[in-house]
Length: 329
Image 1 (cartoon, rainbow, N blue to C red):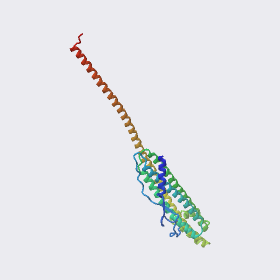
Image 2 (cartoon, one colour):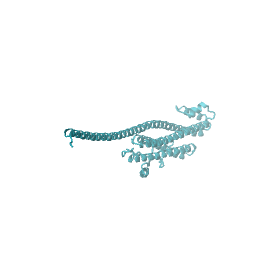
Image 3 (tube, rainbow, N blue to C red):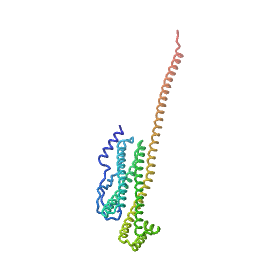
Image 4 (spheres, helix red, strand yellow):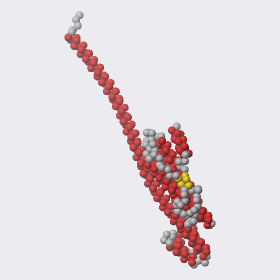
């Protein structure tokens, strides 16, 4: 019955919209593709409402409002992680569309959507991390500590899997963008050496742009070469943004790994303390029962001694009376 009551309370809380989202404003994150879509609004891109972390109360036995609030926050986190995973899938789709699209207007639209979606997903991941951290820092005493550990472990595992999926998506499209840059460069310079291709694809110092510019001047297909050069510049910017996102995701994953270890240690400490207290309480109860038994035995012995003393006194009195006043026939 207690589990049903908790489930009913959880559903009521989630129905009130504790884990709802609101549309995020423009300008979050950094653009992909170098497009001019800064004024494009996205109603489908959402970021979470940053709610203050609840304080978990207890009714003395680890149940009650404390665990109800805990289950409610677990449900909210699962919704946020599902939204994060959905964002990653949409980001993958937009990368694919940008790679295959040739229309400038559509490119700008996809770029604006990707820009806002990446920014919203970045904010969402930070919120999930903070809420998991806050949830793990709250103390829930008693036997529910083990339940808390299992639920937290499940939520952290799902989030870290979603982060790894995001990393895989970004790494895949970084490679595909580089392949696109290589194809565009070979259009301009079909006889390019492997060293020149590598310099253009991995253009970190600007030498690749110089090589590309020199290839354009010697190309007989000037118009096509200029278009290829513009796309290569845009793809370089895309690659730079992806690499920045990969660095952020690697840091996030590392932070979560450290957090897992810290929170598990905290929960284990609380649980071990609770087990120790329970054992001490049981030991004290055993000692109390032994003391009660001993007290009863002592009282019984005192009564036995008392009646023995009375009996002895009576015997002595009888002897004295007989000795002083002997019975005569």
